[in-house]
Length: 285
Image 1 (spheres, rainbow, N blue to C red):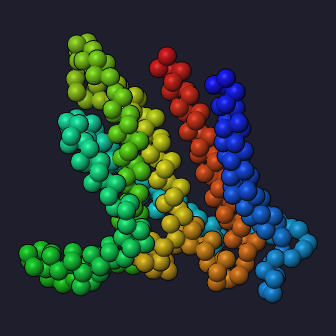
Image 2 (spheres, rainbow, N blue to C red):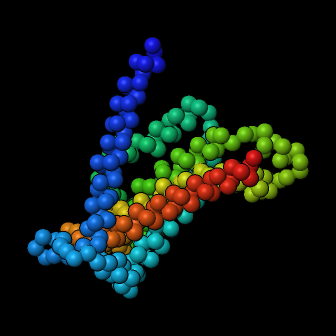
Image 3 (tube, helix red, strand yellow):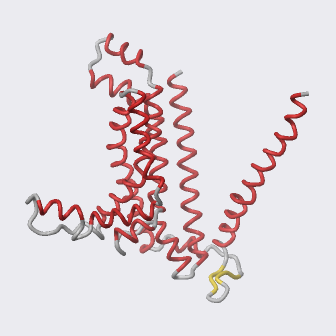
């Protein structure tokens, strides 16, 4: 009787989930794919015939340089997040449960504020007459303000500030699951701290590293408002190209093609992550 009553609820949930996926995920993406193979029209934005001109335009040296520079800044952001997040997550897993809750709460509190507002707040800190320059000048470390805004470094700082929690949380999860018996066994077998870290801790936390890299790398290429506010026109991301093509250049096929390439790249990284995770699991077994 209980299972019979559960069946309508189960069917309703499945219909809701599949309806959500079809109408709010699959259909919009199909529209973007369709737009990417249509012809640019100055009046109606899109028209026939179908062609692959937008995809060919992606190989233009100008846009190719933007994509490569975007990938470079996203990779630097991911590296900085990893260098900061790995020891932070390790230390977080070592403190008591009460302190862990407080630190995790402080880590996620910034998400209560819109990321655009936080980026403008960071701009006030990095400005020529901002808090950072004023503090450095007041203690005598510099004689004149540093040019921090509208640089590549400012964009990377902004991306790290926004995306660092996405690196820390997966790492914290794997450190929490790390069995202390394995570390003790490594020490009992004569391995030093460095050897234990390289041969035991790093392989066991690699799934968290890969998850953090995936959660940081691709979003870092799409946060177009960060370069708009902090980086100026010379430090564009792929997201800036897509936004400019839709809103300014009115070249919807090219903007859609760039979006498809970014989506396919994300799907490829997710697939590679699953394969790596399965391979690590098989080796651990």
